[in-house]
Image (cartoon, rainbow, N blue to C red; front, top):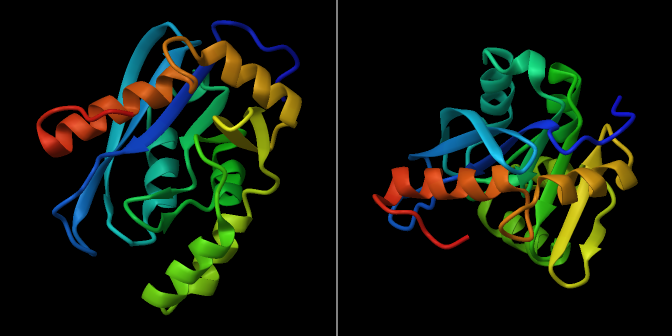
Length: 194
């Protein structure tokens, strides 16, 4: 439990690399950046995940539990709940198995109807994926029209404080911004715009 949010709170933020020319079943990189607050990068972890697979949850859990940073981490930050297309994070399982609360940060409010339609069209197991997406719980608005978040294993007010404390050069936490830069550079040879 986080009683007080310190500026130097240890977080890990995950994002995947872009994959414009890859197909379902191929691999993309998932990068986790470990930071002290929004200023100091302490390290990084990475795993390969499957486009439209169901292996991102295991990749996140494994990267945290096998990391030398494990004991210092207080919060997991996710840039959305889906990675590598519709490879959906089971946020409740990640919380249970790591013991760390999660904050899912997105720039646009999810359109669940459009997501469900896409899942129905492309996946036989669409119901399972939709259930995992909805398991993130209530969506809170941090900055109207610009930043939204979900809080798993942590209250919404504390989650908002953590987002603010770890954001420095953009509207989202630095760990997520840097994870995006690194992951996209690995996949494309150059980072893409966040």
